[in-house]
Image 1 (cartoon, rainbow, N blue to C red):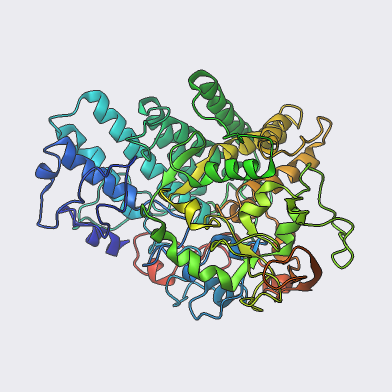
Image 2 (image 1 turned 90 degrees about the horizontal axis):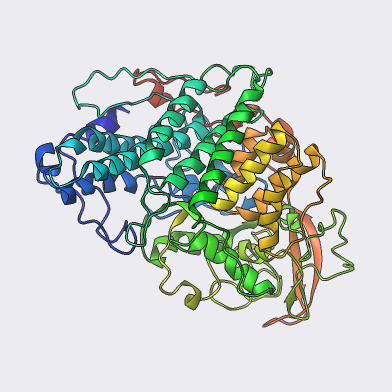
Length: 583
């Protein structure tokens, strides 16, 4: 943290981003702060200059896809799902985090493989965002050409940037040192770690302070700025995480778990708080409207897939509540494209997707003698449309719009894989990506719907919860869950629905963590061999399953993995951070 404070001097040195890297709507707010030593008075001498400071805070918000330079290439240019049950990394790469730190159990507080962890406290960008946001909050009053209403709205945006940054730290490490002002470079570096409970409370307080001053949804020009809908949705996400069994239990999740990493007791009121946050969101949605699930243009599998694609991929729209950005053009994701051939989704994940009508895919499906085609029948998809948008399967095209190289007799088939490829965020053809500026859908409406359903189910039972799950299912043509479903069954259905809807959107890992899903960390993972009846464009396949390389967790699971280790070098700085349980 000392290094962070020194780098973010009062002069507001120029950030690493160019003018085209972050846009609100389609127009950038201006160039980044000058590096010529501009002082605070000049930076807040006009609305235009002040906006550059707040824009700088936005540039440091989390982004889930690898975009090149550190620290934006977590897990060695991999995706967070690679350490969940949804995806397996098969990359022979010295910096690949999943293989070199997680699958072999070698992650430690003294890890020296730079940028290969899922999260490295002290080296991430959250405190940068927090610092810029506090500078803005403390100096916005000086801006002469802004109305009080404009100042209040921008300050609310800055508070939400801070809340989101702390929410990200909470999910990875628990309670953290809390910075509540813009730190002077020569200030005494004493920032003790606050408890898990205090961190949650402080985040919620910031969001509650911001909500009254934010627009429900931004217009096209300001798309990408924080909104009331985003703040209310983020509040639900934070409260749901805190209410979940790992952190909200009379039994500690690890023998060394302390007040910094859990509550230490169980309270039903935490579930109720999450439910009330969801209720407040939907009360506001019913009043304001605008946000809604994007519906297919017609009742076909392709139209449903495209509606789902629009929902997560496109800026603006009626579904993305919080959008973060690292760039504008497709090239921003180039590191994602060229590394996906060496890894892939697991068969376990593929098997989660139901048939196209909503019936569960059989757990005992006979792949060698299938009673029904598992992917396509006469050219028509037979499964949940979201499967094909998340996973490149045999018989479909990949991002170069040619048959996906996932069957063994394809000329570009790679044996070091899973038999599937990641499709999410990649899209099948160049024409699919044309004129579609990229983003990270940090929070979408379906997550709020499923989170609210979960909170209702845990507080009141399934009766009033199932309708929110069914809305998400119905959008892609699946039949609804029965009204008679039990609480335990609905709990499992919601967790599965979240995996299907938010594949590669960094939801699954945190779901496994907050529910303490030891069995999912330990289970065997599988791939699929597929052989086509034609080398160039097969229309039928034979299949056989195989077990993927096992992970250290299979036989040596330790719940310490729920939270990231704190680098010992960070603790040694002495400002107040402590180590997480088990590390």
